Amino acid sequence: MYFSLMPRPREFEPDAVLNVAMLRFWERGYRAVSVEDLVKATGVKPGSLYSAFPGGKRALFLKSLERYSRLVVPEKLGELEASDASLAEVRGYFDGLVRDLLSPEGRQGCLLVNTAIENAAEDDEAAAVVRGHLARLERCMTHALENAVRRGQVRASLDCAGSAKLLVATCQGLMVVGKANPDGVLLRAIVDNAFAALA
Image (cartoon, rainbow, N blue to C red):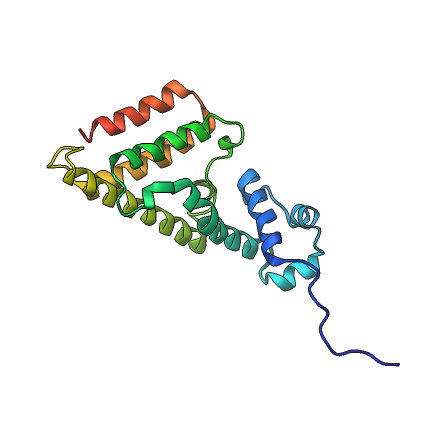
């Protein structure tokens, strides 16, 4: 009898599994998603899942955060990451957040913000991904505000780095408030007051 020593070909695409896992974690959070949930959602057997992602659920979660940062975040940032971004792009980013938070799908929030609340205090690797996202957002905001100063769109004495930090904190808080109380008047008032401080 002949037995092949060649490894069996993988019967699933890891990226497809990551997409499904990312969506599950985004919708429900890390703790609420079980390995059984992931097996059922992906259609991949537990042994194959652990073979492809050593570390199991946590490894899948960390890979999902990386995938979210690479694929979803650029869509959300949009023109804010452009080299010529200015005050309009900063405002556009906030207006987009409000629109998202007022939609049924948008109330699930941002996977990275959700992770900051649920996991960052006890998971150093997850916290590092969140910190990287916040730093990226802060760099975008700082650069856009520096352009806005040069173009006379905000006051000349504006502390761009300090104001960017405040705007980043505001948008994180906005997403938390929006999940609990998706009231358009309230959310727009938060944004309006944040931008009033730039004038």
